Length: 143
Image (cartoon, rainbow, N blue to C red; front, side, top):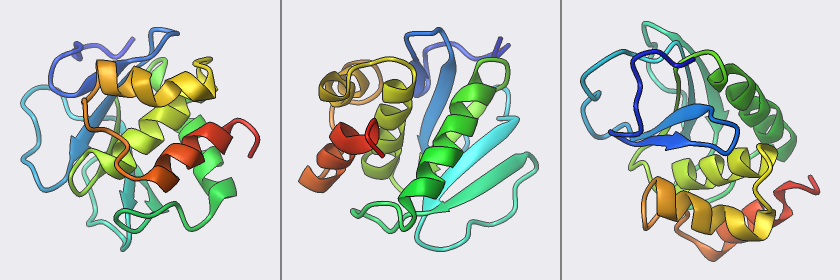
């Protein structure tokens, strides 16, 4: 599972054991294996990559434009992270990426009211930047 990825370099281990790399696209690609699948959380379409990727329209400091699509894409990312190297990334790697990782944690069984703390503890202490992003995570299980 996820050969070549450890819990270093922005890798979040979810309760099921699935590994997901969070990243800021303004930073260089970390050394080591590249993802086999990625989800890019940006206000505009990202450039092409050498690996399979999905774009989830999500403006900076905001919420995804299509919540149903967000749930579908994040579910796919979680399912694939069980056997593939999956990356979730936005510009800086904290707000949108942290929110998406917290939503994936909810899908993986973390209670919604604990998901932000889980991601801050295991991914980045400033993940999930805005009050509306925190509310989005809390309500994600009901979406």
